[in-house]
Length: 484
Ligand SMILES: Cc1ncc(COP(=O)(O)O)c(C=O)c1O
Image 1: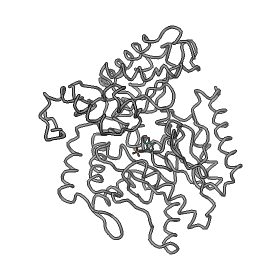
Image 2: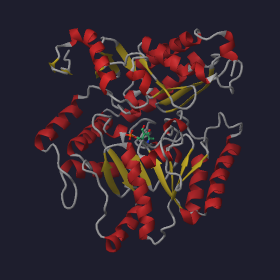
Image 3: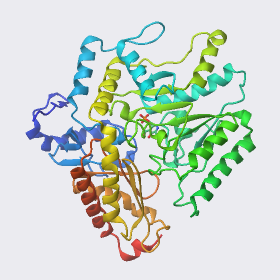
Image 4: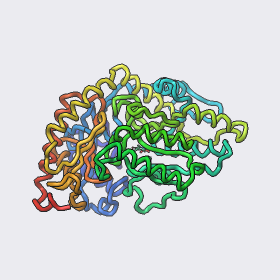
């Protein structure tokens, strides 16, 4: 068993037998020096919250912490390690590329084979529906590019007023200024100044809390809300609609039947571009290369990241459809060179990781595996948890799943917020050797295991999550279970 040698402050630390003791040292060092995303900064820095989990290594779906605990990662880290950990082929591809050409840019007149090959491969995977690929390093910067593209093409077309972007409540699109403004989750807005003048938000297609029982009526409600925004603002002021095929960070919610057909009709009628944020849903998460294909979505622009390299290297991509490409081309004579790009656009080592990752998905037919094992996992969860007094809804699309908790005796009433029930389930799950994820909206536990998941691992997820929920439920008093 090989263990990466950790670098310690004043030299090189020794090996794994020391990691248990040293994990406390790393934790202390971390509290002293690292500013973490999504952590109560004061409590963490002052040692008032539990020690962080020091992750040491991983293989397949299994993560090992510095204390030597072996934990089944049912969320693929941040739903990105789609092919699982320990893929030597990706590591070798990066090492070979790094040795040959670790970095070169693709600005003005330069390119390299990984950029060209990966772009061609991505277009092939869309069946030729998309025309061009622009690379970045993260989902956030790719979505930032999307907005710039939507504005650019309207400027080129002589429609400088057509600039607003409609996003959805509970959508998540990133952490940059524009993409966090587009994000419809208040947890990501606290304390930051958002861009308000060009962002409008429409309802989330989550029927569970909507008060609707009939999906067709609920879809009409979603469409009416979108139509009302367009009527109020004027279609000539709206450039694009950005959405995930299914809600991800907002609670793993698949859309109701007919939603996307109806929404797309509205967008086409008003000449509004559709930016499909497939950062979570592509590369097999929903059993397809692109999750949008499940609902017949025909986007103008697509955002990819995460599963593009299975998280082995930071890489994102914007896929540009023919309509937008035509408009971008028309910008040449008017505006000259396209003035947008990042130092690490099409980074060769990251692109090499992307190519190896896609080759693994193809050669091992992991899309078929995801399609096979997903219903098995879903059925296992339903068998174990349906009827549990604190489980309000179990929902899933492919290998994106969620369990939403509600008060006992009423599936449509929240548990008191300060009980942080999903957080209790998360903590118990870790103790039982399982990583799930508390989603930032509501009392929701999300699951998104690697698409190489086996049935045996699916059984373990069900068993460990079920146990964690029972144990967390036992920490509530009868009145806490029932009270909203
Ligand atoms: C749908 C979606 N879009 C964009 C992003 C942002 O990606 P990144 O964190 O790589 O910037 C995420 C991240 O979780 C996401 O889920």
